[in-house]
Image 1 (tube, helix red, strand yellow):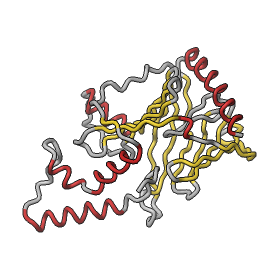
Image 2 (image 1 turned 135 degrees about the vertical axis):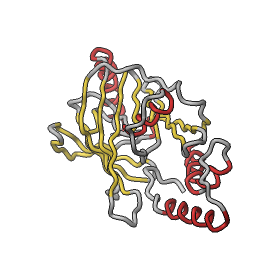
Image 3 (image 1 turned 90 degrees about the horizontal axis):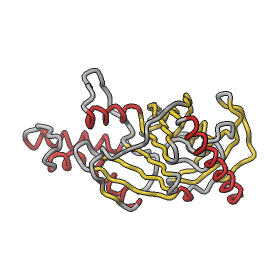
Image 4 (image 1 turned 45 degrees about the vertical axis):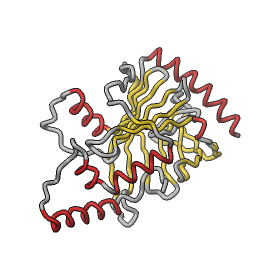
Length: 268
């Protein structure tokens, strides 16, 4: 089964590359719906874009894209209000077969990256079929990030790509969910249009980490947000005076950390 998946994905990637070069590229929008706190029933939703140009693709939320445009390109942000729940930028390089995860864990700290191989996604194609959003789809399963994921992909769109880090199937991923039904990706729109070459050179030089260290560092930042911000020269100064004020701030931050307990990749 795995050999068939690899063969079909390679074939699909060949058509994807030719298709993207001939038709300029793709701008694909997904909805991310997830449960941030497993003790809650309130789902959060956010839109993200999968931009494909040649042999590379980029997955980023629309809010994160706007924040970066304001921060790095001096775009007028006076009318923009909002914070992205997902600070990641996912770059897929199909020529190198690499997936690079960029993330700034806190606003005024450095950027960290982790690089993974695409063949780490060991897909199992299942016999189930369905029509979703007008596309004939087939179901596939993969274990990734200590979760079991189910994807519905369509060979009608010969793009071996999908939301977040997911790729390698013989067709575009239309829908995805994890086995706990607390994470969902849903295709909203697909535009075939001219796209710019993918270039992340505007980002500050990142710190490369191994995967376990990457998520360990992320957890340390999220758990100690107040202390890290106070100790960073360019960090946010909360302006609390006295032991009582600091204690209240620390307690609030700790409560927020406890409610952020359902990360897309679960590494303790």
